[in-house]
Amino acid sequence: MPDFKDTILQDSAISNQISLLRFTSGEQKRVLAILTKLQKDLRLKLLGDLTDFSKARTNKLLKAATAVIDHEYKTVQQDLDFTDLAKQQADTTVKSFAAIGLDASLPTEAVLKALVNDSLIEGAPSAAWWAKQSDDTAFKFKAQVRQGIAGNETVQQIVRRIVGSPRLGTPGIMATSRRGASALVHTSIQSVANDARLATFQANSDIVKGVRFLATLDSHTSLTCIAHSGAEWDLSGKPISGNLPFASPPLHFNCRSVLTPITRTYKELGIDIPEAPEGTRASDEGQIPASTTMSGFLKSKPRSYVDDLLGPGRAKLFLDGKITLPQLLDFAGNPLTLDQLKAI
Image (tube, rainbow, N blue to C red; front, side):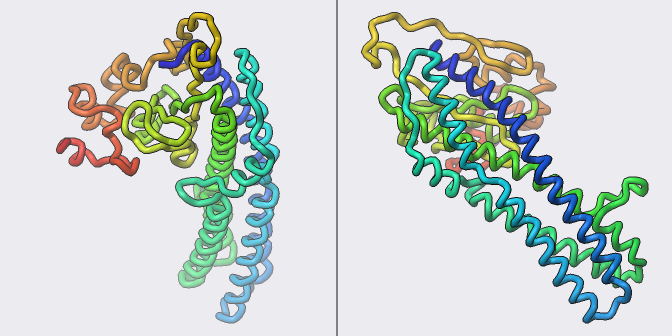
């Protein structure tokens, strides 16, 4: 259960998430501007180079287009240097400790620089995800051009396969690329921010004894984050409550969860004052007691809410007391199927 100090730090983490969303929005606009330029470049190449459908000319066009796609995605990666973000997040975390009267220090610059390079999203660095998105866009571009040629389409029809047509309700492949890029920007920022905060907690083990997984209490939370909500680990990753293996957000694309610190008690800090009572935390129904767990939160909601969030089958097993929320996942942190849950 979070004490008053931890409740204040949770509020600070949530406020910081709002600031991160504003920062994310700005970064997404920059990336989408690059992809808009890419779309224009591809359209011009199609209109200028696809004047006949000879094999040699088509292969030359596809090779040139692939080079353009590769260049623009590399530009995206170069523009997204999150070293300053890591420093800012570490500094914000230190200031949040100062606000409750605890003296904290920053991780070394070498640690922060390393975590930016090593930050992972679903087990892979963000650079690998950008490379995958670049390859996917190039693959889809080639496929759409070849399908258009095979179908004896006009150049304008092939262009629409790439850039889309709002008037005709045709999305085009670039719409998918834009959505993927926006999700990757958001998730990359969350990954670096959470890693920077965790590094700051670890650099201050004299005042922090562990971390708590804080999931957003609303109807958009994923099964994975629901299962982890409220889980606690010490700074070495050993479970304090529950048996789920240590997991640092983001756990999936567009994840909104954060790790918050578990501070040492005043007694453990050598301060002879009584512990303050708990505070509150935010949810989609306003402020609720900070000790409210995801399990308690869901049990207070209408059955339809729980059905929508977990699925009717999982909701029934949970509300009937046959499974707990952490049991939604296996020991590797992967969601279990309904049949697997029924066998528990």
